[in-house]
Length: 395
Image 1 (cartoon, rainbow, N blue to C red):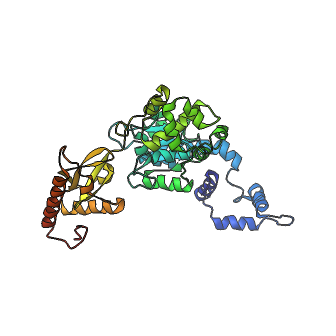
Image 2 (image 1 turned 180 degrees about the vertical axis):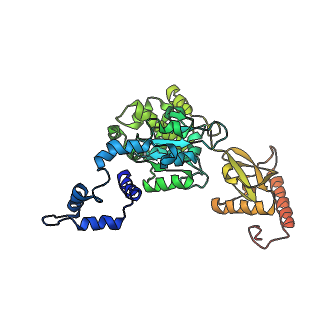
């Protein structure tokens, strides 16, 4: 990947009408006697020859003078401005700063600047919703940052701007030199792959990856897992005992945030449980990603509601219970919609409705079996019969 300075050199050559062939010919004019490397030849060419006496700025001058000037050009003269104008997003891994443009939104168009998101914290943020991973086609950085259940969301908000012009005149454009385009789900996925994000359930390993410059990591219990950490929350000071030798509030807050991302709790729920030494609320109380039960035939699964965008669904009256939660079964309203649901089940796997169907209180096992058989026979009749042993319609 090109550095800002390397990109500037190439752009300068193009703007001044110089080609790579001209550059190579210039190097050929350098007296190579006593020169041991190409780097030395290049330095002589840059200082003594250039392109007929003119040449781009050296790297020091570029960083001190040219780069700040470039970053403050009118909005459409910079790549940064163009990305934000189109509603994209930028990220600095080194600074942990995200610049997200919401200028395409009809309500409250703006540019938001967020801080405190080093690469591993950003990866956790994106993957915090169950079933939505870093390679999801339905997630982008704006979705992740705008999540109302985001732990300590407002603590990460640094500034906002009404326009690209207002943003470009601020200090933020040149607050970093490693800006990556993370626009859309593709840009975000590419960035996380580029940074080689590794997944781990060990708290110390994760903290070292997320905050490599923090010396506090040395005091974390090397065998502590996130399951251990969440179990220690209601013990109050016992959480620090489980954590290890490091009793630091900043470290605790960072781990609390990661626990929220991994287990779906809000920050207040985790903090109150720790402070008051009280049990964490049940998963039903915590803010969980909204799920929907979709079915094709008499097989179903739970999917994120965002995955059903573009599918016309209708309830069929059947209710299933999964992990203590009740869901009405939704099926495709048309044949084409049913095919889309079937594709979802192919990617997520499926479960038999009969195993999860909610029974009215007082129903006997015999009655439940009879109703299941009647429903199966009715389904087979509607489908015109099937020879498939598991009852799936293969049309």
